[in-house]
Amino acid sequence: MAGYSVAREIRRLDPEHVIAIVTEEGGGYYYKPAISNALRMKKTASALVMKDLSRLSTELGAQFVVGEAERVDAADNKVVLKDGTELGYENLVLATGSQPRKIELAAADHHVFDVNSLAQYGRLREHLQQGMRIAVIGSGMIGCEIAEDLLQHGVKPLVITPDAYPLQRMLPVEIGTRLETILEAAGVEWYCAMKTMRVSAEGSAYAMSVDEGTSLSVDAFLVAAGQVPRTELAKAAGIRTSLGIVVDECGLTSVPNIYALGDCAEYTSGWLPYIAPISFASKAVALSITGQATKMVFPPMPVKLKTHTYPISLLPPVSMEGVTAELETTVKGQKLLYKESTGAICGFVLAGEVAREADAIAKTMTLAT
Amino acid sequence: MRKTLMCVICGWIYDEELGAPDHGIAPGTKWEDVPDSWSCPECGAGKSDFDMIEL
Image 1 (cartoon, each protein chain N blue to C red):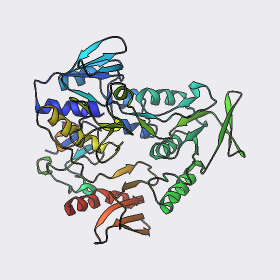
Image 2 (image 1 turned 90 degrees about the vertical axis):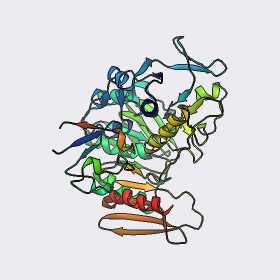
Image 3 (image 1 turned 60 degrees about the vertical axis):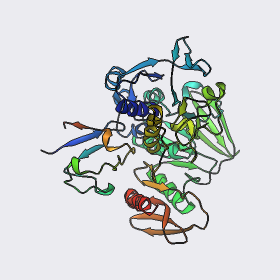
Image 4 (image 1 turned 180 degrees about the vertical axis):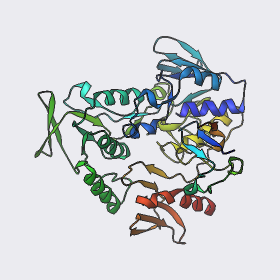
């Protein structure tokens, strides 16, 4: 996504710029967040593709190289692919994304899924059958969204998480437990605050024991235990990484002419593994590459949770210092506003019908700064 | 003539007749009159990332 976005911006600025995109996604461009809603939309993996590579290539005036980069040779300004192909560059953009955090499960590989790519979604969808029971490991954004989506497909989700309630790191307890209750009524089974988990094969299915007590029976596993930035390529090339690939305000890494953005990057304002920042980061990176060093400017960008039975939009405050929180509960949902000592809104969590007010509130915050 | 545009990044659709009332654009607002600073409600892409489509 980030790679496509930068290529579009560069082409807009410079019709002559030579662009080559290395990708493992040979099927074309798709909007990744759509995966966690795809079951509900009754879409197959191929139906999620918005543009195939030949059309993209023509539109962008870019060459697509399907393959995987093995290493970056920064001294010689070239990228070496797994198949031995070498690509020289003047400027290199790392948009390697993130991958699901691995969880050790005593289960056959073909019963363990994630929803981090179109190919993985395709595998999952082909495997799913009405009445199946799927253990969803993790209760973050992806875990919650996919659990709800599985229900739409006639599949029973059992969410297993060490957190006390869903989205514990993003939501206050009042809103998190409300989401839990609403999704439970819809059919999600929750196993929260689980410290241990043991899996053993039982015929063609699996027996799971959580917290040494409760026994569950499941058919397959969906791992949604958080994402990890893909930084191996950068690390091996001697580029500075911390949580992600460290970049400055223009998106430049610690090595000249190498940029990074999207889920693999750690911006000066932190790791922002969401969609909206890509649009702003790609503009700055494209300008910087075409010769006009430009700093990234991120407006307040609400994060939206696509749980249809209880939609949530949130924007955490930049700092909690001197900030007070006010929670208002009405028939239209729950509205938590973070306010500075001056009374100005500096963040929010909106759940239910009020979630649609997110952009309007975020806009007032832009005006205030 | 009523125009419809689609965000090339995420597929979100802007219909002039419907506008985007939750995102600051009143129903009936012509695409030309949508401010350049407006961004896609789904993915944050800019106004220039929208293409005209036929429905």
